[in-house]
Length: 269
Image (cartoon, rainbow, N blue to C red; front, side):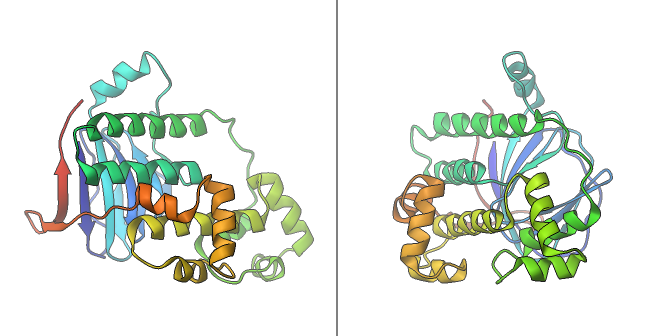
């Protein structure tokens, strides 16, 4: 079952768990999720997976809009006999996941005779991406200053960041930051900033009518042609084609019990 919900900003809610596994795509806004000892920040474009029965609590920093995919545990059990599926809380925030999630949202909004099988295929691909990321070897312990540097890039990638400024903020030399950042994150600072900007641009393309030239400036690119060149390199298609494939908007309706809710497509499969 797929549902889209809108949540007002507010303090941490009561701890809760769900009978079904839940895959969440953040469309708008930012929230924090506390799950055990882990505190995860979920920003627009992020995908978050929670197994059935996982106790968690959320804090919505602003108005948040999400697409939820509710999966019966029995379905995952059947899949597990043929492939590896996620069994623990996980988040994935990359260009491939963004593409799949936006296609999923487009199919959710389309609701034609083929949307059911398309949704099923996209959900399976997303689960595979999460399982693939979980199967990677456990990373070595990352220094606290490097975690801070990575958080700066992840949360402020739209700003004019520089190696020297980030290094000064975390208290290390910029050359040391550059080397260690690439060693632990497998990308340079500049590459991660560029990827997050492309990811944010794809989000604006899919969920707004903002002109391409304006999106380019919002996302820190020099002009529309610069955005188009890099977008095609990372996403494999032009921004206009991406918008045509993934850009759909739902109409909001009011749900019961004070929870704003968007349209729902059913279908336990």
